[in-house]
Image 1 (spheres, rainbow, N blue to C red):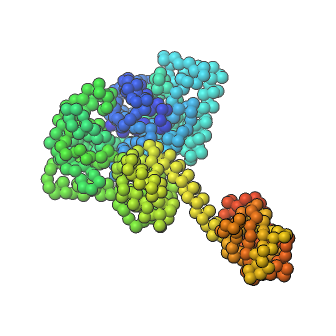
Image 2 (image 1 turned 30 degrees about the vertical axis):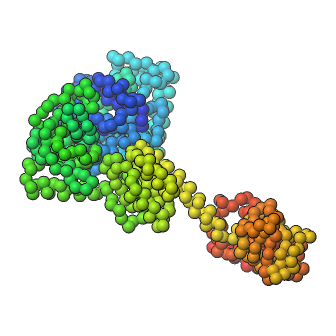
Image 3 (image 1 turned 90 degrees about the vertical axis):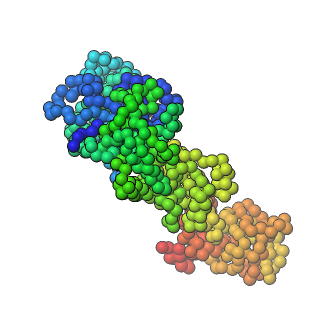
Length: 595
């Protein structure tokens, strides 16, 4: 048995300084080379313990027992993806995470999304409260450690700093976490450690590395034990086309070892890919796998935990986030591992089923898993979940869902595209497609969509009910006395439609609307302010009704109960007439409409 490197993931809101933080640790310039200074894909950096001890210096001197952890394998993820491709069966690949938060901006949508995913995967984490250098009046003396530097600040600047710190503490408390500045933490298993730092100046980096080292040594040593000579277990992080190499797989090997010539089994959407390792390239220490200036070493084998670039034939269809395993190449071993790997994939991918729910799409299996989890947290059911861009089949699935439950006639996509022809079909068929690079935003947009659908459903339901209406028979506008009586009326409040029952001011049903006309045009509905000719059966002008009478819609008791549920769609004056109708009804029946 051996102890592997600690897998450390950095995550948080876009532009809060994740890559700059790793830059400072690596002393490289990766961030400046990124488009818009935003990380475009997952990258790896190997940080040996010798470097950590050099950077953290005397902060680790107080650690009495021998440091056995060999170092860190640091993983920089896109802010929107929040390390979701770092997966293995049963949870996340990361041992520990750094949640980077701009101390001046505080929590942002992707901060909350990252915390949700950390909670879901039960990954312990620390908070890097970045950009302390931007606090007004902040002074940095490189010769001093962080706490010494803070204590040397003016009283006023310390006050501003403490206020920002405890705003973070308060926000974490709202989310159910106890947190404290790292030097005040009494129990790392019960409190989150907040390390104030500046990725720009490097202040606080020694303290961050020291806290991570102490936590790993104290709480993760058992978890880090691996079988070094066992067959490799890993996860694909990126699939790339590279000049001179062809298709390459950037992967993390988290257990065992991988050698040239080994048989490699890779999970896929339909059946596992089986190939042989042709080339292995390992990045140098402190280098980063995607930096073109990185010096890759051509190696014969690699041992966990490490990042490695693999070249193997037939991997063009490999997908990020998929599990990989190595073996000697015996037929029975390949069959067994292929079955195990595909079972793991099927845990995430849901084929078309009879279940009622939304249709999910994502670019990676990790993205699909994260989206599924956050939707399940919101109690949003899922009918299908698959990888790749939106297809015609996905639209058919959503369309078929409309007949079962129109709230779920929607396609939700994470980090994928919708081809132009698919967008046209979706528009023609009125199928809602919601895609975004932020899972939090997908859920937010979906909830807004359901509110729109809910309103449409309620308005349709409301259109079938007898609504509150009060109208007057106009004097001098009797067109026929009976069979049917036809009179001019004016809608004072509310609206009335053909077929609605009518009662008088004493609450007695006297007729129903047979038909209505305005300027010899037939009307289905007449609204407030309208003057129309109304035909009523079963009444005679001068007997049951008279010129100048006020009449009301005779709302059935069942309709009244539904109107109460939908009252937000009624106007203030309609509600007043509704109360008037209720008062009239309850003169004869005190419990009318109750319950």
